[in-house]
Length: 265
Image (cartoon, rainbow, N blue to C red; front, side):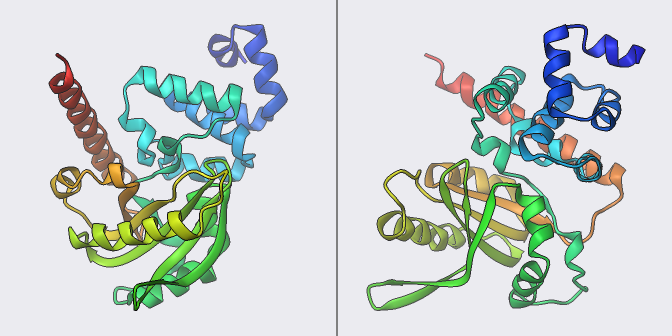
């Protein structure tokens, strides 16, 4: 109780928290020392209505560190969490994750892209939980026809709060530059033929076993609405995952700071 009081001395904040979360939630959250990380889990738990068990799973799988928002400056993180809490405004930075943890699929050492797709659909409920509460499944191997050529989107989803179609492309190996063109075609087709008037442009996620960050950065995929992320079929030891994510966050922030400096007049 002393710890709880130290973190929540403001009575208004206290009433807000108690209205949205149970004491069991709060008892777990007060021992997260990083204020931004704690605010992230408070906001997401309330917004997505996580049970205590689900919240524990998200904390243990280091969801905050895997979500793109953790790579941003502290002020930006605070602003986006406030927008989620006060305006129910969900940003892409809260949506994108890297890596995605798909250890629940039960895949063995050797599997195909079709095996991966089938495993995701077999465990769709758990997959949607990893992706986020407002994710809705629309179809698999969705055919699109451009000219005289048919192409197939591996998995098609819709995110209710972002109001966007989400195309997911599965790759067993390393991300390659030509994958950008493939997914970009999907997105432009969806924008032209499937997007409703009140929706935002569709986005794409390329889930791959490996990626080279320099290649991803040079391609400027964000301008095309594409996000590249690794997937893990087995969760590594926590200290290994923690160190890898720490390095990724530090590198992303360094790159962001360097880009901001280069844009200054």
